View (cartoon, one colour):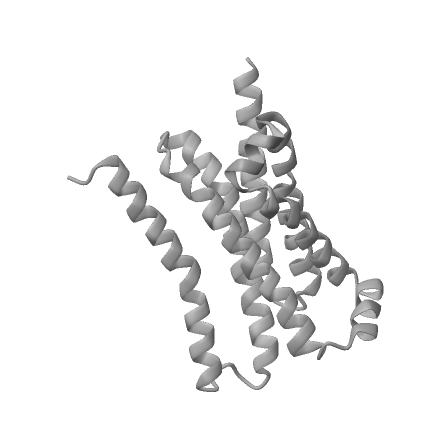
Length: 199
């Protein structure tokens, strides 16, 4: 049988593969011209969906640890959280570069005029301090209490991301509804868990 350490290593490698594989897929599709009539739009949407899925998965690792007690979820949570930030940053950069052609006056105008852009930018901005403080030395310097309070912003960021997707959607609301349901379930778990641990 695999040791506990080996299981955690294997899980981290699985997380790495799962987070990196979408990049290989979208690169392959771009190279062979299989991204439809508007490849740039496909890239923007794909990176955003991937980032939001990974962000919700990052949050879900907390309840997974609570329910199973397996420390591997907590060890890999920082890893998948950084991948979520990477994909959401790629989402914004692909929107700026592929969709807006680095036209900064127009980009700023969209940020001011379009609510879904404002929500998306705000959600990504909130992830910046979480990414910066995700490293062990920074966490130790901050102290556990302050660090945990800061990293609760991940829920706000995820809510902004879901709102961004919801407003952007025009017809089929199945996907944003699924994202919203998952987020509400994770928030409910966090609230119930906090209440139970205070008793």
